Length: 162
Image (cartoon, rainbow, N blue to C red; front, top):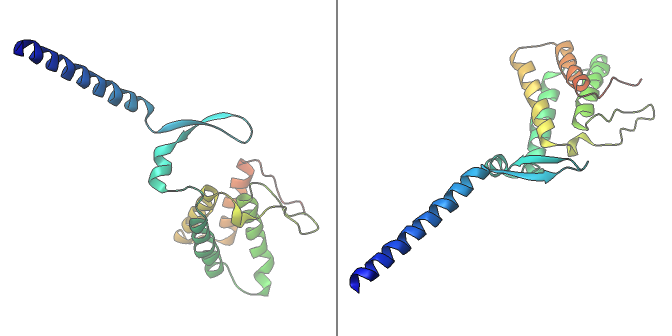
């Protein structure tokens, strides 16, 4: 009888071990991705691990930091000052804001119809990287303008209307 109980316990232990291994194997198959539906109705994979590691991707505090303490501060510090340079600065700001608002250009009435400060954090990080590279390489205003304009063109955001 004791022998029979031993066999039953070891059989139960084996089943428990198999169940644990099955559960662990199933979790390895997922690898941190989940299917999600976009605003346009397309099904895409979403990387949960990246979101977990980076925190909330669209974090308002992080947006504020990147936009005001990153992008704006660097541009105000490194773009030429003075009235004679205002138009040149405006060209760069227009390209930056067009990219951050995903293609919304300012119209002749001065209305953009979107606010780059409320854009996507990934876009702000990309502009921030471009500005940082521009500063590090000691580039000219033409270099910065061309980099951001080329980025806008590659995304299909077009050129300035006026």
